[in-house]
Image 1 (cartoon, each protein chain N blue to C red):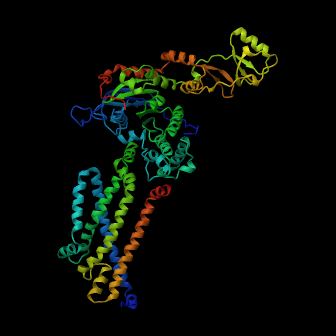
Image 2: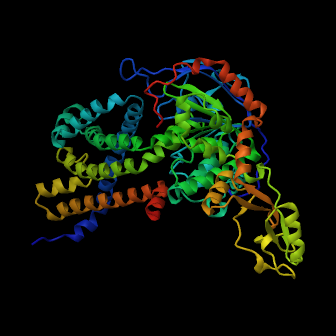
Image 3: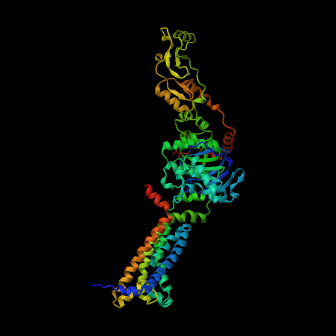
Length: 420
Length: 220
């Protein structure tokens, strides 16, 4: 997924609607809720968005996912893709129009990587040459050099590479809808993080409609445009944009599920660039010491940031201590505050400030020039105002729809709904 | 002291070729028939797992019938035709072929089956393109054991096959009856060599069919 050449998607995402969908299983013991059951689920996944279903095991999230490509048939209700009832479509034709990525990859061990990726194009009867060029394009797209990987077998790849092939295979026929069930669950945390980032970047170009299942709330917050927290029995506990879910959990259950550190998780949703920076009092190397001191006394800014001729920070200095005459130079500056990139998450930035025991960090642009200061106060102010932050209208509509169908919301707080 | 009459062998090369050819027929026909039956029963096992127990029991029962007894019982019915040999030989392949076919089909990981279905394979194309190819290593292991066993059993059939069937085994039987050592050794060594060559050929076939299995062996 390292390649920036994103194929212009010929088919954009399609809306997925769950209309009062239930799936009942015979419970293992009398009176118990059967594992994986889904009850009266009404939910719309807006076109081109990632909707994450998150919840403890057995909450019905995977059942919900598998009803979309009819690996499981609902007991009740309808599922529509772009307004069309999937129950009325030919099942193999439906499945060939839906990408499917699972944790164990499900790659075919007896086929080469190229054959695996070309699975759906082959089933659809594409010409050989078209299959081949599409395969190479997709391998490059997911960061696997076609020449090196085409003829290998899945057993010869690492877990992360196999997962990339799984994503390429799902994208092969450019389906408008993708189903992803814990797609990055089987790889180590470092690889998972990289795959998540690369997939998000891919999605920016592809704009598929993605239903994504995970039990990991951090992954849900990171990947989701819309996060749906599910609870035992296949009911929706809460649906919302990630920031809203963290800021205002609707129930004790959701609050426990998103975790006690939800404030910190919210910080991870934003970047330094989102916050209004504090202007830094600057002094340029080569300025007369007297001038700098006079200016500081006038403005009251005792601590001044010394920058070089290109506005790159050299360090802090105490302007009131500038006794002698002459010009300012680098030796006048004290050690630096931490330097922050505009793309750093607020969580990482705050962590760095706390680590270095300073109240502000210096934010620089790509060329190292000072843009301003990020202070803890500014971060707190930003988070306070965040509740009114804009939610995209399609996500807001989806959330409103869930709220309007409270069937999924009754019977909260059962003792058997301990988050996993 | 054993004395091999090479000159006799040299004069009877036609006979050796005929008997070898018949031996191969008595190998290939029962193997193909047994394989087809095992495959059909294997497909049935995928659809109705409940059949595995009874079918295994029946094929196991067939396997316990002494081969000589089976040939003897069938001779009055089919006479000295090849069917008298082919029917029991087929029955003996069933246990091994069936058990290995079922094991092979069941060795396909659940997520691979699910992925195939989810990507839009029909259940027939999934069977031919995914399940059967992945079952090949275990099926071929069964085929190799069954083939070598069958080659051995063909020689037993010669005891009641008279001059009609028994492949290279007929040399053994006739040699014993006439105390002609050369024939005995010709039959014995011939059938062992046949078994050896067939096994090598099957092993080669298996490798050709499963390049992916070797890729795994190399990478670990």
